[in-house]
Image (cartoon, rainbow, N blue to C red; front, side, top):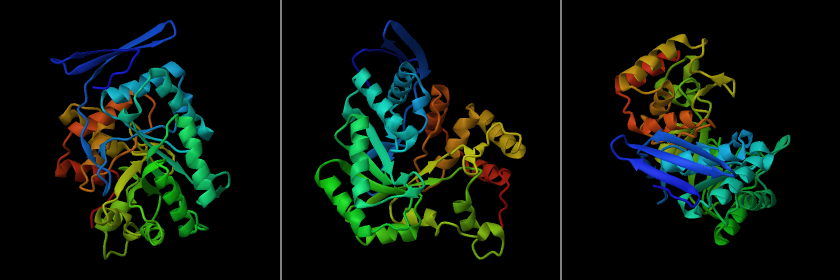
Length: 342
């Protein structure tokens, strides 16, 4: 269990729970959460052990300092120590606030796995050597750390020069600023282009994927078909990542469309919610837990990235590692989302 100065810890073995108190000024925040035994996995082809759930930090700038400290400590108490950042989240404020929270709670750096991304700028994408190096330095400063465990190229840049990316990666690796590299929202062809120059293994591809946004799965089902679901929009990236030991990190795992909203408890998805709720009752968990467990059931061994700042929902996401969705349940949920098996 993670322990830091300034934090009171107690464990109730019979109820499998943890009680946490955080001092912030003259206020003590106390709360108790059911203990979640986090499952771990290897990150791509690397030797790095990571939790099966990544904690997304895109919205943490909306939390007050005490709330953010409580959020981070809650994640760490359940071994959800992989935190996903990007230089553009909150205009850099999310990384800055996270660094301040870690410094305030005196959390040991070695207890954290930090990932950040770069490449999205105002009105453009930029994967130039200069921007990559400057972005990493900025992230390190804001996060109050000397190194990133994982660094990703956030979006493909059609003007990218793979040799420049390779130079930047070499410098970052040699300086000890980045330990593992990857991409986000890249197709297999774009990854192969980078690999012609980049010497480091690309061990991550962060991709949008959820029950209600699963075209990369549907296209595989509809091979040799002349219907809309057979149209491949990403170069069969799911199979490619599995064949090349690249960990897929699904982002927006509870959303449909492109940030159009959450499908859970949404009147636009009555059949899907009815099936998810039925599965949730069978496993005695929340619908959030089932939605994440559906992704974890896939043999690609994905690492979903949460997007919530609510501690209860974060714990529901983490509980998904304890839920074994059956084959019948997985397919029932897939069909209830409006997908038709050929």
